[in-house]
Image (cartoon, rainbow, N blue to C red):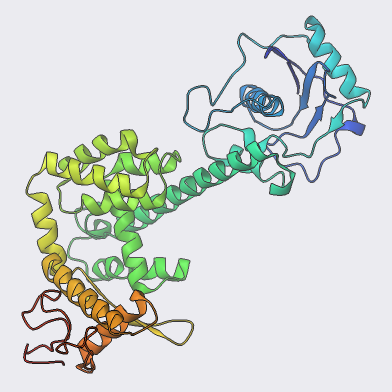
Length: 413
């Protein structure tokens, strides 16, 4: 199939492939454009030839964006009005009916136009993520794209990643359903796991379902359990979120946020929240989406935030992990907010007193030293900065004895 796009935006198409001399490609892929000949500046337009199942409209739209970029015009981004431009009217049955199109085809056949690499238009494609878009993008290398196409390809690859992750999560959810995992529904044939009521084997299958995922994806047991919980939650409680992920409108991080903020809600309220936030989620950063989720959850269930806090505090933990450079990380999660803020204030106050007394290294290092010193009870005496009493300013720390005081409040720890 060959298509012509003239300088006015009119399009025509006919079954007239370019000659072999103009159709040299690198391993053509199914569903991808085979060749593209671009006329010299001032000529009629673009002549495009392709094979596979890519729709004509997408080819013409990508060629139109390519021409706009060459002309120095702004291109609408994904999701903006006009981003998926399509030519007006039906494609002509014969290219000879369009003199500009005839000139374009003849110039391409005569070798007068320069032949672009196979994937030159790929980054200009605006289409739903799926096999067609993946095949088209994979036809070329990033180094072959113009600046606008390069940016477009980044967006397209991210949307394809979301599409693939949605399908993976759907498959994990189906595995959970077949194994009778709680909350995933049951396979046909009975009310119990796998259709076998009170079957100990079926119960073992449900218990070990995350292990199957762990083996398939080389995950830790905890990681596989979380991945299956997310898959089951999106498939059952948040189908619109999973659909938006599959359409590339949101990425996995945003889908996780929606699942996280609705975890304390029943299915109906969770869906009410996702309907509120998905309208703008595609154009929001993670921080903006968090704020939207907080407002939406409070709107549908004012008590949900308090329940979520109480449940989270029950999961509080402290973890120690080794770092790649021989150091270690010590962190606490899900701590009571007020107590965590008071602890942070105390650490900062001690660090400021250390800095005022002449300690170097910057506040990050001083806070780390104060943190470890407080936990181990090895925090040294902090000399006063002004020649006064040791221990630092009395009003900087949460206790009455100053930031250098130990746990008992009677002196430096």
